[in-house]
Image (cartoon, rainbow, N blue to C red; front, side, top):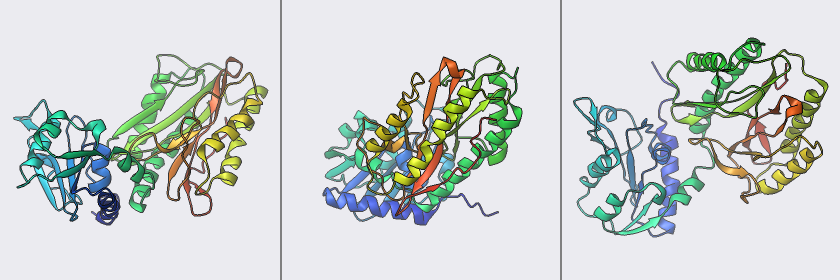
Length: 369
């Protein structure tokens, strides 16, 4: 049966071509990718931890990928797929990265002289064994990952199908007396059934009468607000959006006023964001808007990119000075928190940056009840 979410060779080759262009700019003969997300971005190979993967791309375009033995026959976008023994008689070996790197090293007859590597996850044994001029290209990879290709957008949309189903379920299931642990278990089951396979990630916030956190052995009470900031992993790609529900479906006047203030943020986003717009300026604009609702507090970022990691660029945050680019997939999550609100409210939408603005990707109900 054809799998519409299998590895897309064309998407991977497009990303490989963009990385090759960066190698040429920096006069590098080879790039060595050791971050799992980077390896998947380049080749389509999602390898679950604690197993390891490593990939290289030479200046002539040749791509080599190392994965555990039992995955070596899968259709990845690489010219050579090299296996390594991740386990012996079903016992995992200790140093997975070293074993994967040794398999790659053995495939080379000569050592490239100038190599780009991801220094944030590049073992000392690699740089000491493979003598060369090493250049850190970690930021280059992060930058290239910002704009999503069509195959990546398909994966992100598939992950979001689980989020939509979870929120539809939560809207009917939340009631006084339900425990946070029970809700957590129900939502994880809904996500798994929706995707039809095991999740590669499940999070983030499942607390009632709280700004957020993991589920507790605590039951919801009438009048409280229940923030569900949910994300799943679908074959490595993440979803991330948030809805807030009133436990007894009867929000108070102040709670509704806070919701109105937050809902007003999204028209600001949709009228402001376009390629070249400042993320920092947008953050300050929304911060100023929400400051009018003191003593309720907005004390976190406004949003961030999403992809193979939960937080990617662009960062809608005063600590970064990013600008939007066409093709980015990002989230916007304004919130207001205070004891008066019985925890607080956070609302979150996902967008894609187009050539002239944004496309809303999560057009689902936002209401408290």
